[in-house]
Amino acid sequence: MEHQKGWNPFMEENGIEIVSESTERTVLRVVPQKMHKNPYNMIHGGLLFTMIDCAAGITARADGNIYVTQNAYVNFLTNTDQEEEILAETDVIRRGATIVAVHVVVRTAAGKQLADAVVDMFRIPGEQK
Image 1 (tube, rainbow, N blue to C red):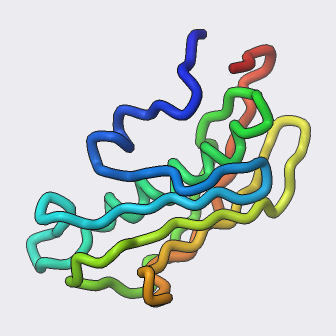
Image 2 (image 1 turned 180 degrees about the vertical axis):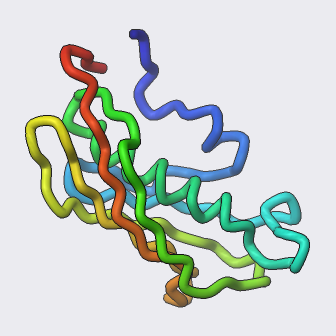
Image 3 (image 1 turned 90 degrees about the vertical axis):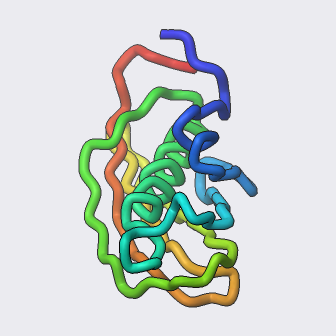
């Protein structure tokens, strides 16, 4: 498997940028545009989930291994119709031999929490970046 570090075409298409990344903590950002809105003029839940999934994956893969999403539990807490910067921030709950459990919080730059999630990332045995 050939992978280019840091490149994710889905993130790029959605305007999601990496602010910082490490094996313990990753921060992503996006400034929502009209294309990121749902029919009620709020931020689409798919954008919030994309940020959650990508942030967890980047955190897991920071150890040099290849991971895929095994499970995600997401609480969508509230929403916003403002086109203000949104951040996804991770903290590792546990890094095991095959599973990395990652806690992800999505909030506005002003601190309004939009979603809270736990994502389990599964390491593909034998594969490395």
